[in-house]
Length: 249
Image 1 (cartoon, one colour):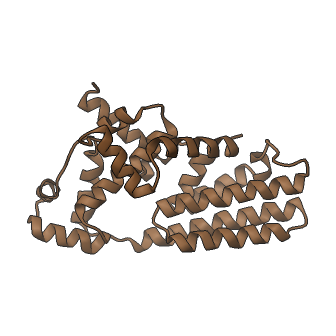
Image 2 (cartoon, helix red, strand yellow; image 1 turned 90 degrees about the vertical axis):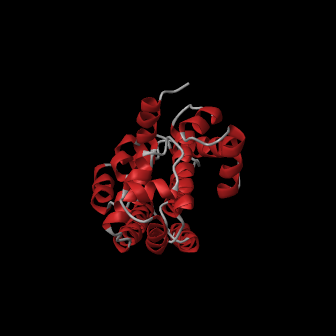
Image 3 (cartoon, helix red, strand yellow; image 1 turned 120 degrees about the vertical axis):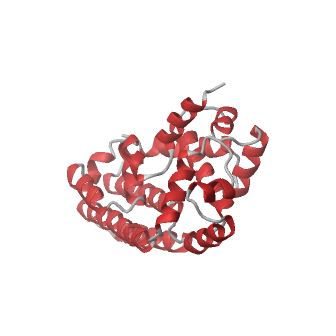
């Protein structure tokens, strides 16, 4: 049984917030920086470590074709991370398709590297704008902070409203107006999002993740995860493990 203090420490490491982006390494950290719209850091990362240095594992005997394959993987990962960060699904995949088509027509490795740079900066610009457009009032910012600090236990809209000293009905309306969803759904999505990070970046079992995030049972966790993402936690972990193998140095 994990103590409440232990749960908080674990969850703080894996929640998808700007304060935890630095815990991610290599490509996963880079994708999170793009997802968070941190353009200056993405630009610095691109300057510090060129695309060609990230593709030590060739995917083809033809160097040019290998770079094209790697760019396709990068495009898919950027689209997925940005969708998780709130980017419109169709827009994310249309952007991915645009750069994959450009890469397909490229005739040199230098051209592929420039296309990759343009693609990364294009995605991060979209995410930067998206985050600037999301300006929340002080009570909603406080409520979101409260939710993140309490993902390790079951919390209700009434409890969150009390924490920010607002009437529950008024708070619920304000929260939905500013975030586009009810408080209960926001809490669930943040728990599912944190579970995704735990599945990808840790060895915790489904049972342990269910306990960490205060789901009523392991079966309830699996059911809600599958409802949101279309796959079970086990399948999700396996799929992302394979993708990380492809994108690792």
